[in-house]
Length: 392
Image (tube, rainbow, N blue to C red):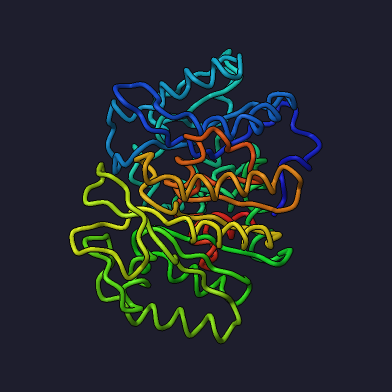
């Protein structure tokens, strides 16, 4: 890919900039600006280069219909405050904008086209729609890695008609993912959680031949605990996954990748109940496993200490309740401690894990925190993402 940071002449260039500004909106207000904050460096860079910026983005799933509650207006207002430049929301039907000189009619530095998913041609990946979008700019920049697993017109088609480049945030994302999949400094460890093994099996298949350790926690670990003959009481688990577990265990032996499972757990009868430490063979039928125990934490700490690269996707327990967040907090703090002395390269991804470290206010203490969701996992599965392929 060619990066926008290496383009020398951007003065007065009309830059079609695809961003992911899909932030949560509640009654017209943004409740989490993380995705906006991450792309500010790209916008600052283009402003300094005196480019004319035309932003393409979406919010929610309007499915080709105009929904007032999914307007990008609150996002435009937030960008105006943070960048201290004029931002104009263009509500006119995109298909009625006939040429790129429309920029000359406005006094604003940034034009924000209304929700691109208000047009069903977007998600249908229509070539004609992509060509029309391309007619509005001089160059195209994709800085929306989190949308790059989607075969949508603003992600895949514009690059067929304009010189196309990656944005600064997409560059950072690709660099971080390459560091844990291709340019790895070993030993490398993956801490992986979540409620379902089936949603992570392709990640495990793809990464296990390259990784030294897989630490399995969260709901996924319950299936392994039960597979080994222990009762997990009323704990969350996935049905019909014995064959997947057998495959993972067999692959780990074949690829000489260690699997680290909980040795003890924290249980309770309810999500708000009293926590108790249990050995694996002591979980009662009316209890739920909600966190990892102290022996498991100590074992994981030792593995992190020996690692040079770490990928974390999935908390260790029900972190929403402080009584069951200790395992996740200890993992987070250990990685932060190693990062402080540049002894580890750390990448964190997945909604719950990102929520946890944001809650702890330590996101800046990891090498990279991905908010890309589906694109993050699909890349780790070894898939070729349509948006990245389009830039190549």
